[in-house]
Image (cartoon, rainbow, N blue to C red; front, side):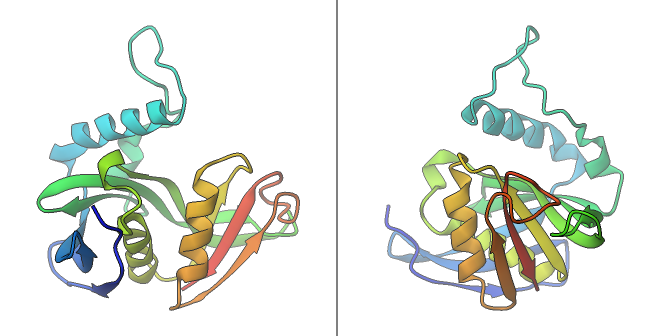
Amino acid sequence: MGKASSYRTYDLIKKDIWWSSILLRGALMQLNVDLVKLEKRIVLERLLQLMLYEGGMEPGADGLIDWGESLDSYFGESMNVPLFFMMEGRIVGFTLIKLGRMLKGPDGHSNIKMNVIEEFFIVRPWRRKGIGTAAAHMILNRYRGQWAITTFPDDARTRFWRHVATGYKQGKSHEFSPGEHMGFPGQFVWMIDT
């Protein structure tokens, strides 16, 4: 499968779905970003377990990996948004975002209202094709405001988020190296204004 060479985003107003065209395998394909409905919560829970396992976390005695948070808030609070990424009618990933959170600013003291990507996952066969970048840019375009994205220095996602932030042309971004942003000490932080 070839790497995506370009994409365009077109927001659709209805049905909590928006899409982007991606050149993949030499063909123009459609990436949908869909709001996760309550009846699909079990699918989201399974994908979250897969993400945690691939991230090196071990299952407990019950066979499940403790995420440390409940998904309940993503189906009960309007400012917590669960989204699926869909290609060819298949779920190829998900994200969990929190909108309008009060977070510590770079000085470590002031509070700033920010949107946060809590989790972001692309299923292995669909990685390194531009789908994650396209989906991240679509989310930044859809939910305007200030964003904070963080990773730890040894996290493989650091390179991905740097690529997303520097490639985002409809706003401005700033990268803080570990130790530069006192609100997230020891982490890389990307502040993106959309």
